[in-house]
Length: 433
Image 1: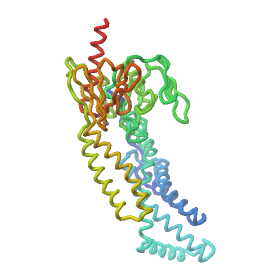
Image 2 (image 1 turned 45 degrees about the vertical axis):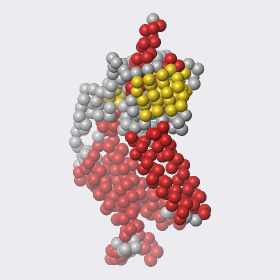
Image 3 (image 1 turned 90 degrees about the vertical axis):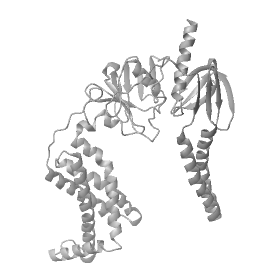
Image 4 (image 1 turned 60 degrees about the vertical axis):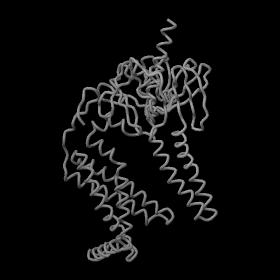
């Protein structure tokens, strides 16, 4: 990451620690975690003991990272990750062999206090059994899944290797969300706010604004109170992350996502207070649409080519699946799988209908809206009281609060409609004045 004056700065961490100690700690941690969890497989009942496999897969990565940190390994994320992976690949099968050896000795002699030659012979026989064709897939799968689950422990490893980047708002803005549409910005750049109340809440009190005071209530942590003047900027997170408010010392103050109630209002509040927005790379982000002197008075909003391509692909895939279910499966399975495929097929059919039929046509003052089922309604610009933004869509509301039409922010020329609406409001205000 390069430093930038526009966004939060990150200082390069000072290298330190020992490669040898890190490798030793990772191996000991992996071996200990695998040994204890594999041992449960033999101590617990059969119907419960198999859960030890899942425990082993998830625990061994954490213990390897814990060992690397405890013995103060080299502070390089790449070196640490590959060292932990190597420790898993060696420590997991070795621990499995040791557990099998100990259980074999106990069953054969009733004690673990045996001669060194007996121990060596039993251990070599155990290794030979693990390398047999019927046993090899078992522990190979165990190692591969352990390498998959170790990714859950990278955060704790990063906290030791590079604590500055671990707590950096740009990194936090990329993680921690709840799905692909968790933080999709509504009608970006932000539409101007007609009225920002003195007090309001975001996400049922998780964020509270009271004038210039902001209160943030993180999960399982005490509340944070700070002033709007303490906010140095906001990092706009990706769709699966958060938007992070940070202070002048590059510390996180609060976080929010666009999909939460009143999040758009909070964003407009920050813009009104002059708070800068940056992307996860630290580059400034324009929060206002550029003013245009002339706006076309005749244009059409329609779905983009993505709906056409994605719709036909989905119809071909799930239509074929539904046809196969009807023709080749037995009655019980046919009904079950067809019932599963048809609703998904309906979604893709809806995309195609939306592409071919859905339109919002503007011709001067006259607006014509046609939905996916070819139902048409006409109204004038003077009938529109507001354009209410939502998550990836906007509503045209009348003065009585009725929804006149809907359009997606990703539709072609959607930004042109917002510009035309802004121009119309300015013209209407000039007439009233």
